[in-house]
Image (cartoon, rainbow, N blue to C red; front, side):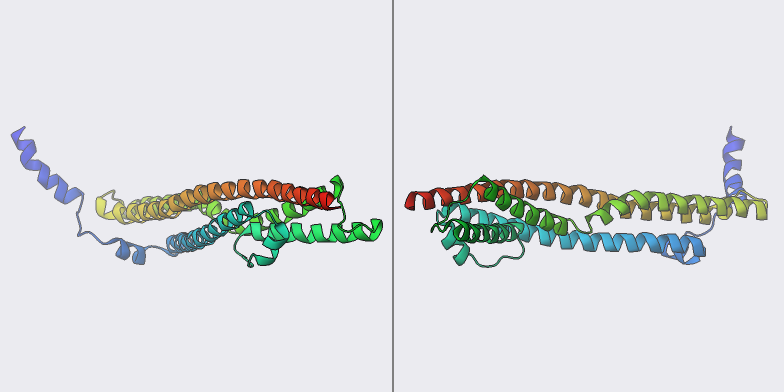
Length: 252
């Protein structure tokens, strides 16, 4: 047992041929063209994903803040005509577009009814309120589609990056086996560069995928909440114009 312990360091130093370690950057520079291409794609995916996440965070934060402001103004006012004239244009919120589209449909319906019936103020029937609701819904859906733009790229990054990293890993391991065949040795000095190259590709794939999948789920949840806000506001708009119609009927 003592003889084996004395002989073990000799085995390690002669068979493994330990060489000084290299940094990850040095290994990347010494890697093959294919491995560098995989890493370049993964780095590009990661940079674009982070840019999208920062942009979407700012865009959705503004949309939510402005939408809460519009809802507060809308619920505190009973005169929808005065509110429409006094409310400033707020382009960041989908509710602003919904309100303006619904009001445009309301004014058009009122003008048509006045021409047909000669009544002033004109009374609207159920079909007109259906058109008002549809106009608001279309505007809201268009704005949600705009706000969800490029979020799908995060899903693409989350799904593709691990496989690209795996491709780089397999390629690096193939290089290690090729080096073993050329040199006829399985020492650490022979296989280590290929294995290190493979592990760098794996790390790069995970580093691109993990933030992307977290960002995709986070922004999808925020878009769902905003979608509920849009649906509720459409209902409130139709109710407000129904109330306006009842007031006009009472005046008439």
